Image (cartoon, rainbow, N blue to C red; front, top):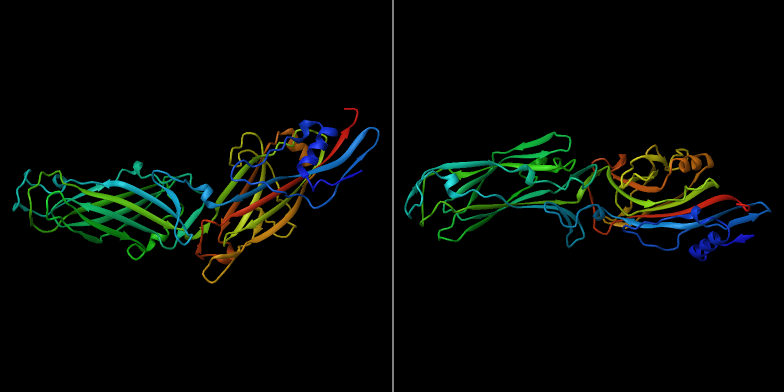
Length: 419
């Protein structure tokens, strides 16, 4: 008897379950995060044969049709970091720290307050270390490293103090997860204009980029857990007050960090998890997966599919098995399945995704091990990388770039009709 399972795969599978296979055999879950469903299945006719005691056959069904994008793994709106897409489609990582540095006039200049217009204010200065705990980068952002081509740090300054001052970023420190830190020191000074009318302010923007700090492109690799600044402000000369002051006049400093993903990627990891609860019946003989990836990123990738127990919640916690293990097949490495970069035009924009399909079987011995160890989750993990031939290359990452993942499963079984 031959059953075509691909005209209406879901309904046919239900009929097969109803008539021939215990329901416990087929508890298959699909992606519930960032997934869409469409027909995707094994391009073959499944067979079901029977004698007086046993049914031997197979059934097939699509289980995953999903799109992974970097935007899925970045916070939409975090107090210190978010992702946004500019008018050209380029993804930016953004961090904004409001009122990070707010020295009062009495903190900087040591004169009697209140003070009247015409009072001379001697040269003086004030320095402070920012509160590191308040400048937390979204530390669950990504694994791996990003080397940004055009990062920038902008200080937005509203100065209510009626003294023309200097502003200096003495040190900029990036604190890593392992406790290490990378510090950049600078002696560059910037001039902050002063208001001449009480109650008003002068606004100044100071942009720190690779023209000011050449190593800025490197210091965000890996993405740090915290950032801290040591800042100085003050005056080098005696100045005269243009209006009366109380000493509470402030300099309000916000910090805006912009990291456009015109970047070099080093092992950036995207992953997604689905229930895969078919390993619950010893009558399963083997399992075959058909996996298709469409790499829409302009960088090489390595993908692996892990089978885990019930404790895994998005990371490969207790890995019981992995799918891409046959290094004798084309594009299979020790790490997984190698996906080439998508094709790009002269501007570095993707024009044609790279697509690749493979069939991979899990034999009866491995199936029994997965049954005994209660395998119930499937994790697709993809590492984006500037592969060996692209070392040092910067690429543009747009908001609509995706890694398409499609998986279909075929299960071979042997069922005793007396049970």
